[in-house]
Length: 137
Image (tube, rainbow, N blue to C red; front, side, top):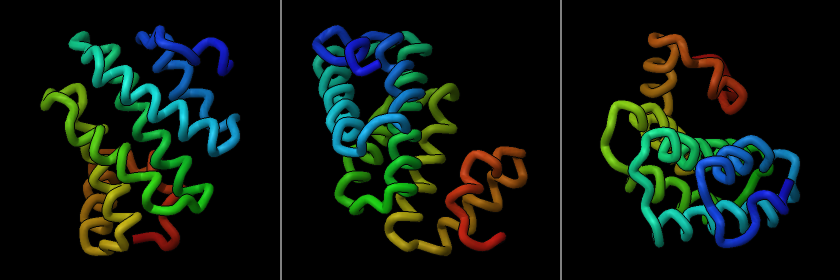
């Protein structure tokens, strides 16, 4: 799988494969590929919504991966910053909400985390972050 997404040819398919396969990778390999994807995007920002959605899923899935691997907070900062920098569109809004959730989680901001958990429960998406909640809120 890494052969498909390694190199300078980052496109929608490469972002898709990375977003879906990183959980099968060694943490260091996943972190390196995620940062490579961000750099590729920065060099050639995409505007089509499907590519933007897949690159945002790379960020969100990596944050979840960091949580489950008890990664140092420094590994999460580039993903949070990247997600916040994406264009403000309805299609990317949910990824930005999840970036805020993971930022609160890694910063120990329980108030913001609880607020976002409540929101995600209200809109029916709690199951997407339930694996990161230690106690039911």
